[in-house]
Amino acid sequence: MKFKPTSIILLLIALMPAIFYTIYEFLSLSETDKLMSEIYEKQMDNVLLDINQSAWEQMSNWSENFRKYFSKNSIISKDTVSRILNNEPALHCVFVTDSSLHKIRLFTSPDTGNSLPMNNFQISQKLQQKRPDIDRMIYRKKVGYDKPVTFVLASGDQEILSVLYVYENESRNTGIFGICINSIRFMESLPIALEDFSQEDVEIGIFDAQTGTILDRTGDISPDNAASVKKVWLFPNYLIGVKMKGIDLNEQVKNRFYNRLKWTLFLNSLFIITIIVLYRSIRGEMKLTRIKSDFVSNVSHELRTPLALIRMYAETLALGRVKTEEKKLEYYHVITKESERLSHLVNTILDFSKMESGNKKYNFQTVDLNTIIKEVMEMYSFHLEQKKFIQNINLYPEPLIINGDSQSISEAIINLIDNAMKYSDEIKMIAIESGQDSDYCWVKVSDKGQGISSADITRIFEKFYRVSSHLVHNTKGSGLGLALVDYIMKAHQGKVLVKSKEGKGSTFQLNFPNIKK
Image (cartoon, rainbow, N blue to C red; front, side, top):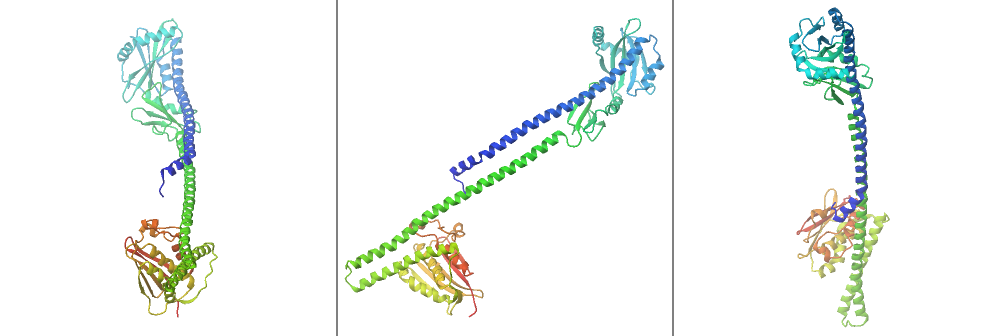
C-alpha cells in the first residue's frame, strides 16, 4: 500500500490524539512515580535515622552509666567496671584520665584479657594527638553542650572505636573517660536491638562498606537490592540497608510503568489499526468511485461509436446517396454488425449486473463446445477481417460435449476475442484452439499482443480493473469483460487459466468439466 504525501499528513493528523494521549500518560505516570519514589525514600530514610539514633542512644546509655560511676567514686573499683563491661559484649575496654591526659587507668572486659592491641603509653599518645578536640569538648561541656570526641583506637581485624566524654568528680575536678567499642561485636548485636524497627513490611541489613559482606539481616536484603543505604554514624566503615518486604516500591513502580506501557501501546495499536482500516476503506471507496466514473466514461464512448456509425450509414441510405445495390448491401451489413456490437455491450452490462446481484439465470443443457466456438467465429469474422487479423482456428476433431449455457459460453469467448483484438499492437493474430483431457473440455484464445505483467495478472479478473499500459489510454473498454468471464466459469464449475508474457502475447484457457457422452 503506497502512501502519498497528502495521505501521510492526514494520517498523522488523525494520529495526533493517540500521540498526545501517550505523552500525557507517560508524563502523568512519571510525576506519580516520582512522587511515590520520594515518599518511599523519605520513609526508608526515616527508618535508617531511627536505627542510627537507636545505636547512638545505646552509646549514650553506656556513657551515662560510666559518667555517674566515675563522678561519684573517687576510688574506682576495677571489679565494678569489669562487671559492667562483662554485661556488654560490644564493650572492649574503658580508660580514665585527668585533664593532662598523661595518667591513664585502663579497664578491660574479662574476655578481652591481654588482647588489647595498645598499651597505656600508646593510648596517651593518641589522646595527645586529639588534644585540640578534647579541649573544645571540655569547653562545650562547661557551657552545657555535651558532644563527645570519637577516634579509631585500633584498626585491623579488631577495629576499636574510642568515644571520649567529660566528667567531674566529687572534688569538681575535670576528668576524661573513653569507651572503647569493638565495632564487629557492636554491629552484630545491633539487629537484636533493632527488632522493633523490622516490622512485617520492612527488612534491615548491616553490611561491610568495603567488601559488601553481610554481617546480619532480618530478611533477604543485600547491598544490591536495598532500597536505601546509609553509613552508621559511629562506624562509617559499616552500612545499614533497608527495603520493603517482598517487592519494593522501585519494583512496583517498574511493574506499574510496564503495565501502563502495555495498555497504552495496546490502545494506540487499536487506534492506529482503526485509522488504517478506515483510511483503506475510504481510499478503496474513492478508488471505486473513480473506477466507476471511468467505467461510465468508457461505456459512453463504447455506446457512442456504434450509434454514430449506425446513424451515419442509416442517414446516408435514407437520403438516397447510395446508388448501387452492392454498396447498399455493404451499408446494411455494417449497420447490422454495429447493432450486434451495441447489443453485445448492453448485454454485457446487464449480465454483469445480474451476476453481481445473483439474479442471473442459466439454461444448462448438453452442448457441443466446438459448435459454440464455430458460431462465435462466424459472427466475429467480419470484425476480425476489418481489423486485418489473421485467424488460426484448430478445433478438436470430435464433439466436445459439456453441460453449459450456450449463450453465456459464447459471451465468455467473445470477451476473450474482443480483448485480444483491443490489445494487439503490431502482430495482429488470434488463435482459437479446443481440446479435451480426462477432466476438462477446453478452449484457448491466444494472441501476439502486448501481454500482461506479473503485477497485473493477479488482478485482471477484478471488476472495472484495466491493465496499466500505453494501449489502455488509446483503447476504450468497460473493465467488465474478464470479470464477466470469471463469473461465467464459476457458474459452470470450471476454471479460467492465463499464461502471458509482456510483449509476447497472452493465452486464456477456459476449462469446462467433462461429461460422458
